[in-house]
Every structure is written in C-alpha cells, then in structure tokens.
Length: 143
Image (cartoon, rainbow, N blue to C red; front, top):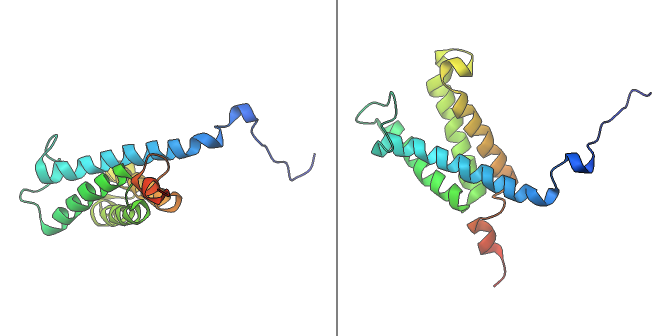
C-alpha cells in the first residue's frame, strides 16, 4: 500500500451529476424564502414580530429588512442571482460581526449560527449560480 491512497465513491453511491442543478435550485429557493421571512418579521411582523427587534426599527435594521425581503424575493425567482447572493452574503457577514460576535465566541451560544449559514450558502450561490428553475436561465435562452 502506498501513501497516496485515494478513495473514490462507486457510481451507485454518488448523486448523478444531472441532479446537481436541481439540488442547487432547492438550496437557493429554500434559503431565500427563509431569509425573506426574517425581513418580513422585522418590517411587517409577519408571521410574527422578530424577537428582540426594537420598535420602531433603526435605519440599519430597516436596510437589513429591505435586503432580506427584496434579496430573498429575487433569489427565490433566480433573478440577478450571483450579484444578489453576494450582497446577501455580505449583509449576513456584517450582521454576524455587528450583532453576534460581541456576545461570545461560540455561534450556537451567541445566536449567530443562522447568520453564518446564510452567509456561506449565499456565498456558494454567488459562485455557483442559480441552478435550475431560475429567471436568469430563462432570460439567457435564445428565443
């Protein structure tokens, strides 16, 4: 046995590559809807008020809510996906460092785990694109 042993999955163990765009679309749509829900909770108290959000919202939280609602809607539709996902990732990075990191080191204890997950999901989507079922893809197709 050599020191350069690599393990490769069998074909039946791996997801077919043809399903990857659909898995990416599912990730994009579900993450975007959850993200949009946070903005709706801040701005419209729907489906309930955002726990701990001051009333009225300061300008910074109004801007965050607008990015969450508009960005979430655009990502759900898959429109301007790469740019919008990059902006949303940046907002989540800023939210983590401004609101959560000062509460302690561990994300599960400082309430920042969702912000980190959103940040890296959106960063991935900004690099990978929208996947299937997107307006970006529909607009790119020749007519």
